[in-house]
Amino acid sequence: MVLHAARVLNVETGRVQAPGEVLVQGGLIVEVGGTVRHPAEAEVIDLGEGTLLPGLIDTHVHLFLHPGAEDLQTVQESVPERTIRAVLAARDDLMAGFTAERDMGTEGAGPADTALRNAIDSGLIPGPRLRVCGNAVDILGGHEDAIGYNPEQHVLPNATQADNSADLVKVIREQFKQGADFIKIYETGKDAVVDGQLVTPYQYTQAELSAAVQEAKRVGRVIAVHATGEPCTLYAAQAGVVSIDHADVLGDETMRIMRERGIVAVPTFTISDYFSQHSASPERQKQLLELHAREFRKQLAAGVSFAMGSDVGPFPHGTQAREFVLMVKYGMKPLDALRAGTVNAARVLGWQGTAGALKPGFWADIVAVEGDPLSDITALQRVTFVMKGGVIYKR
Image 1: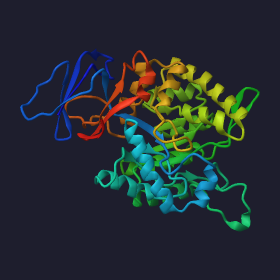
Image 2 (image 1 turned 45 degrees about the vertical axis):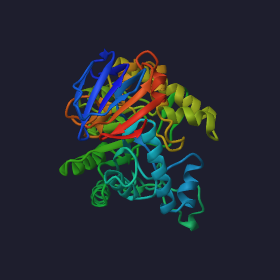
Image 3 (image 1 turned 180 degrees about the vertical axis):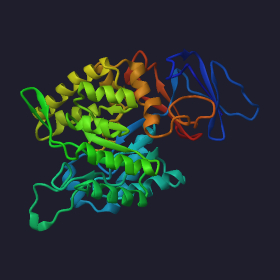
Image 4 (image 1 turned 30 degrees about the vertical axis):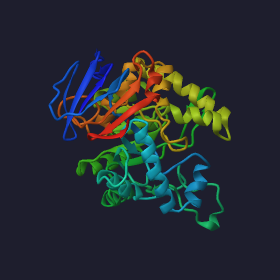
């Protein structure tokens, strides 16, 4: 196939070619340019005034969650029901242009995401390429434990419990046995803003996180952490995690280590923005969002690397391109936001060299959007064409 559009964007260099074309064969990109070869047997697809881009990548999603009372849905809905919903969520995300994602925890559905990933990979159902972690890992009484219920009911937590280094190693081995690609650990919670400053307790020491990172590294895997503030974000950076998700506050030493080791921050503005309008405590959420936006500008100035991650699930799947809009709103340049959701995100997922750019030899994961996202980032919310692995899913 030859894809033809008004523009093709090289997200690595920022160069726009107008018009632009991409030659696809056997599920891979063969050629990219203003014009490409048109083999006699090739189908030419004219995408009009759109811009061709690499498929978008969201590094923080929850396919097993949907809008509503998050804690209640994980108690009231069976794992089979939640898996069916996850199948629909994966389809919606793909149709919105997200050809790859990192699912950051099934919130109590265990390794059901392994089955979802495998079904997508085998072509049984449509969805993004997935990196999955099963349940996230948490301490007793921690961020995702079942707090606030009658103890006699023994309500299960939304994460797997590990209270020390030995527990972490055991749980990590079990998660990998069940099919996880990486491990997610909750490092902070519950957050509060006190006198304009973020206050949050840590859940694991730096030594405990290091033990987890080393165990994952032993089998060539990585650890991602939910961490919002100091000293928790510092512990995570010192341990050598692949990403610090949410990253509301990063101290100077934390940012230095992140730059040195290539650790990315995943801001997840969209979930905060959504909860500031749709939660039981909107004022608290607005405070956290304002603080995060202020700190984000400091992180940009300090040269922190970012990957796009929306935390979609508690808000509707297929709408998470708003994350790009919010990153730009809070100070990021449109091209840098695009890189966060393509080349940088591909590196976080371990798919650098195969995804995240329109280059010969890369997977043919390609989208087209209305208009030019470099001049109007909201164009990413108007995806008109989706191809994954050379297969067209939206046209």
